Structures are given as C-alpha cells and as structure tokens.
Amino acid sequence: MTERVRVRRLPEKAQTDRDSLHAVLDAATVAHIGIVDHDQPFVLPMACARDADRLLLHGSTGSRLMRLMLDGAPACATVAIIDGLVLARSAFNSSMNYRSAMVLGVARIVPDPLEALRLLTEHLLPGRWDTLRPPTRKELAATQVLELPLDEWSVKVSAGPPEDEPEDLDAPVWAGVVPITHTLGAPIPAPDLRFDLPPPPLS
Amino acid sequence: MTERVRVRRLPEKAQTDRDSLHAVLDAATVAHIGIVDHDQPFVLPMACARDADRLLLHGSTGSRLMRLMLDGAPACATVAIIDGLVLARSAFNSSMNYRSAMVLGVARIVPDPLEALRLLTEHLLPGRWDTLRPPTRKELAATQVLELPLDEWSVKVSAGPPEDEPEDLDAPVWAGVVPITHTLGAPIPAPDLRFDLPPPPLS
Image (cartoon, rainbow over all chains, first blue to last red):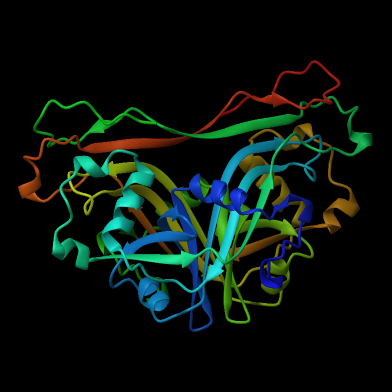
C-alpha cells in the first residue's frame, strides 16, 4: 500500500487483502472515474468489470474523459455500494453502511477489446453475450475499453449496527440499520420486439 | 452553461433546466466528489443533500478531501443513479439507463451547520431529526458540512427502450429494459436496543 491510498479516516474500516478489493469491484456495475483537465477534476460514471488484476472501463471513443485517459492522465476509479442507513440515537453517530474501493493509476487501451467487451457484457448480465451477434468491425472501432491495473488501491467497508455513546442508550428512540438493496425488476420488453421470447433469466 | 460542462457525448440526453438538476440531486443519497492533490485526482463518496441552490456535503473534519476542499481546491460532485440495464439485440447498442448530474465549483463551509446537518439527516430519512437529541457543541465541532453552489453543472438522463439497428430487429433475441431499483429493506434493530420501539416509517 502506498501513502496515497492509506485510509486516514476510520482506518479500522480499511481492508487490505486483495480478495476484499475483488469482492467490492465485482459487486459494482459502475465506477466513478476522476480525471483532471486544466486543474479541474471531472468525475464521470462508467460501466466497469473486474478481470483478474485489471478493472475494465467502458466508454466511447471521442469523449473528453477517454482522450485524457489515453493521453496518460492519472486517473482514479472509485466504486461505492451503499448497503444501508445506520440510524443511531444521535445524528452525529448516524451514518451509512457501504463497501467502497478506490483505484489509482493510468489507464490504457486493452490489448483484447473483443474479450474485454464480452467480460463487460457478461458482468452486467451473465449469459447474455452468447445470445448476441458478434460486434462488427465498425462497432469495435467506435468502442473504447480501457483497463486500469489494480496496483494502487484501498478498500473501506462499513457494516454492522450503529455505535452510540453510552449515555445515549437510554434515549427512547429506535436504532438500527435500514438495509438498502439494489434489485433487478420485472423486465420491460422493447416496443419493437418481434418475437414472443422470454426475458433473460436474472441472477 | 459553460464550455466545461457542455455535454459532448450523446448531447441529446442533456437536460438544461434547473428542475432536472434538482430532481437528479434529490434522488441521490451519495455524491462522488473529485479533488486533485498533486496532480492526482481522488474520488470519494460523500453523503449529500440539495438545499435550494446548494449541494450540501457531509464529511469529517480532518479528512484530506475536506482539507483540500477548504483550501479552495476546485471540486467536482457527480451523482449517478442507475435505473436499468438496456438490453439491445447487439452488445454495441446495449447500455444502461441512468440519471446523472455533475457540479463543478469550489466548496465552502456552510454558514448554518446545524440547519445543514438537519437537512442532511432529513434527506436520508424524513422525520428522523426531530426524534434525536440535538448535537452537542463537541459533535458539531467534529463535523464538517460543506456546500457547493449549483452554478456550473450538467445533467444527463438516459431512459427508455433500446435503440437497435434496423437490420438487428429480426434477430430472435429478447430486447428491452431490466429495471434496477433501490429499495429500503426491513429494518434491523440494534442489538443494544433497550426499548420495544417500532422502527421509523420508511417512505
């Protein structure tokens, strides 16, 4: 771990093993990418998928973010999954439960764009890729998949019940956690669907 | 709108009215804040709540991010709510539906920390604030609430069914949208709850 990614606030929530990093990244569909342009930071959401020790990021050729990243600008990819509201007996000790990861580095074009696209598609909906026609050469040329190596990173996880001050425990107020869940809803068929097909199975 | 926040990619998805900005920010509980430190961008999630024409951000005194922001470092606050997976008949046209907002600016300490804390608490769980004791002076001193003025921003919304190539419409593959919903689950009482109290009503 480098000094740049040392967890300073609530360091007891830091996790330093690679499995924890992978678990957080694998639970995310979107990463927030930070890039600097003329001293101004920009943060944009991008579809992401982890593959071994790289984080795949999907964007479009021609976007400013992509151009800057390809020019070698230092990047930060942050993933945060909010798991719940932590309701303490005081506002001060109320918080959220979350799993978050931050990866610093310089992104580069993937050497295997087709495989990277497949991994991104499969990450969002396992089994989908094989039902689709392969991308055309033109489509591949218009797509940019970048990879950020998982070299410099931090992970922070907050879980469990609220931690109240001892003197607050007699306050007659409910305390606990309200979980936040992210679920897939009932599929909505496209209006121009020409066949009576079942929607894909959702994991 | 400034050139810095002009939507370049898929500009037809840009929305430029202030009501759209407010709607996206009001739907978010967390913003991803970008800050530059020695040419390296850092992106960190922070609890947020909009109040009139400012975005309130909640952090802790002493964090690096807070220190940099208070030193006047340009910031970017990005909110992205993922509403669904858009399954087209090709990988290329598959995407996600989302509502996103990006705000650029320099954050400052709120002039009204107690009211700002109340707004942040109420944003997460309406009605909660009045059930809690007021923060102590010490707690207020250990909390930092910043505000980012809603002066320079962009909003991008992607909604609706997939848009496929005409030649793909005969492919025998399901197409449509799989909604992603973010819901509050059954409250989990704190293990040290001393009273038989009902959990707070969830909106």
